[in-house]
Length: 93
Image (cartoon, rainbow, N blue to C red; front, side, top):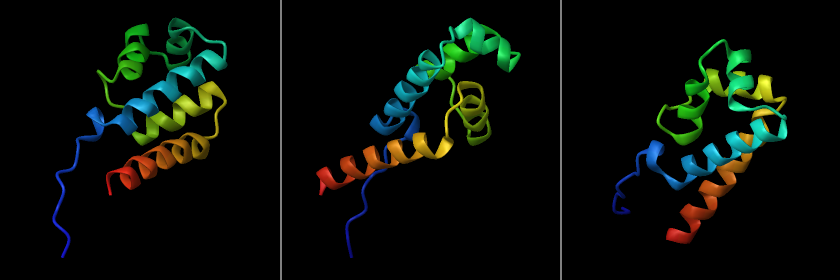
């Protein structure tokens, strides 16, 4: 039996940090400022800022909305984060 490893909280993991970078890059690639993106969400600019900095956690439904607003395929972002996570897991072995 393998010893259990303490799981890192996803909000503070390197994989989640990578996800946040991808989210910010997607907004910039879409040509939107935080304020412009927030208008499309009908939220304050601070909502976008808090999501991008990790102060506020992005749930799966919000991720889909971000992808819609940024014209991004959700599978692309999930695959990229998944690949990053796999590399990190393999490196720890």
